[in-house]
Length: 114
Image (cartoon, rainbow, N blue to C red; front, side):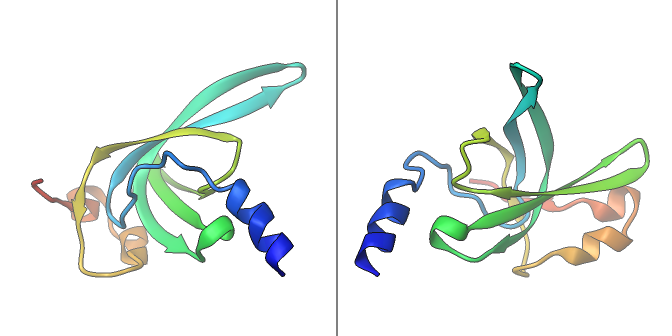
């Protein structure tokens, strides 16, 4: 068991901003197309965080062309190049799935002043 813990600790990402529910983030993803590799930015609101340690994931939601898109990103994945926090959100729940049912300005999250 100690060997598994040592391997998982060695693959944890050291430099990661503090991600909270309701924050608007830009996730820089590495995309492989054939033999080329590029970085694509996915910007949206964090609506959920799950697990912990090496298995930790966060779900990002955005609305593009009137269609809601959600992606789940592993925090410690090598395919996630970088995560930038654009805006800090102020919410009172750990999962804000209620945003799925809201449209327009009702789907906004209040901003936390830091």
